[in-house]
Length: 453
Image 1 (cartoon, rainbow, N blue to C red):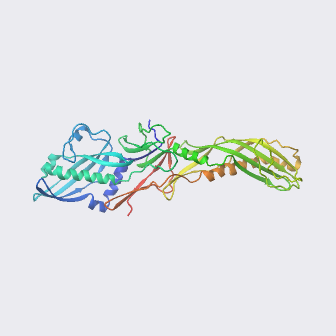
Image 2 (cartoon, rainbow, N blue to C red; image 1 turned 60 degrees about the horizontal axis):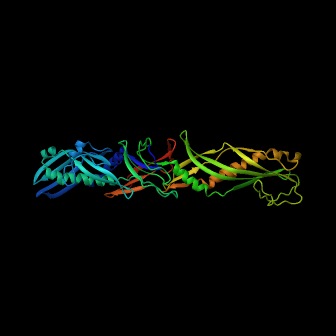
Image 3 (cartoon, helix red, strand yellow; image 1 turned 135 degrees about the vertical axis):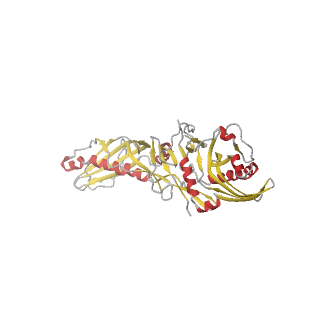
């Protein structure tokens, strides 16, 4: 089973769609897909025009042994044995037309040729190297192109053109600047005879492998990130939250007033995918509360509340203040709290995580007041738990998610731009687009290719 924390990939269709877009470009037509050569080959004067009359396509699988053995390398040597082990694939050039003069004699012909190439990682950057070209030399000979001219002209042209074309296609990059963690060396594979994938894992994760790899559905160029990446980032945010976190509020007026404080420790925030939806499970521990009820004629001073079990010696307490107090434990339901979170592409084409807000939470608390409440404070006492719920919801949970779990940058601008013959080829994500779940542990970002002027 595949194991990785982050992977980027492009399908065979993604490669071919990009090549089709480039083929439709007028500049590419005149500078890449149509080329002229005038040179001497073996003492013979050759002046020809080579035209790719149809879009070249890729097949992300190695050629058969027979096709490989019938192909020729850059030096014109015929290949032997099996295709090299590695990420070998085919680039098909249908209906290549060659016309011009050979030794002053007009020649013209067209046929399919195939280029066999290899994907490699060079300093963690994807690279294409064309290795060999399959041509039907007997057919080209009938058109007036000898083996010497095929090997000296058509084969180098095919190798160079495929190298230039495929190395100009922007491939999504594995982002590296989003957490303090370090990563294993990336690996690369052609998987399912359909997609090229580069993947890596955090050093704390198992070794990266792409066995039985499953690509995302309906994405031709994409990034897959494991929830482990999100959770590493969230753990870094949790570490920034003051411990304990304190919040207080009051409700009522001079006739009857309830004041309360809650303190709690945010233990963890963990992302998960359930029923196709992303959610963050928030676990809060060591929750304690303190409350005061004050009655008629009370001059209420500013309250600084203390944890359970400690002396309430920080409270300003005028001598005329009639009050009852309570310290108590608090539980909440559901535990843990599951709050939806989103992962979106910003206008700057970076990716950010944001945890939402809760609408309601059930608080379980049983304050035992230090004195007789009486009828004056009865209403305040009756609504005390509602006050606790409001503090816990707005000033504990929602305040934390707003301050520490909104617009957290997961990775920076993922845009990749390359250029060939003055043509810009840009790979980018759509701003505002939300990343979508894949299975129970991955989220997926899709990319588009454009040709900005």
